[in-house]
Length: 92
Image (cartoon, rainbow, N blue to C red; front, side, top):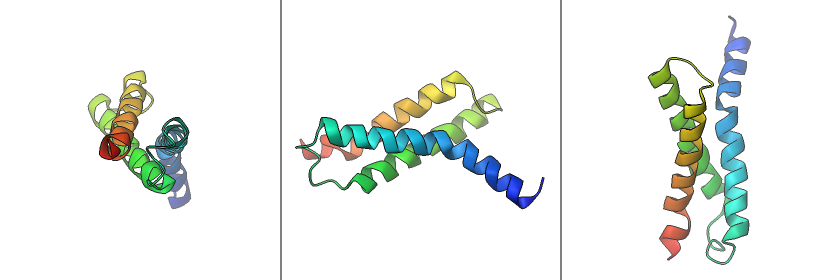
């Protein structure tokens, strides 16, 4: 495997974390627009993507392979927890 192939594998591995993080941060800003007015979108999205990436790596380490539904469930839970931690919980 060459370096370009390795890069594509890494990007495809982290793709779900990026997609879910961006989408969840946008939906959180829409749902709690008053409470999250002062919180920048990119800060929420960054924390959500980072938590999702950690969840994907944890799933890879626990199960030994990528693509398990339990890993994706952990991705959603970690993203939601990160948004809660850095979003409305801090405002209230």
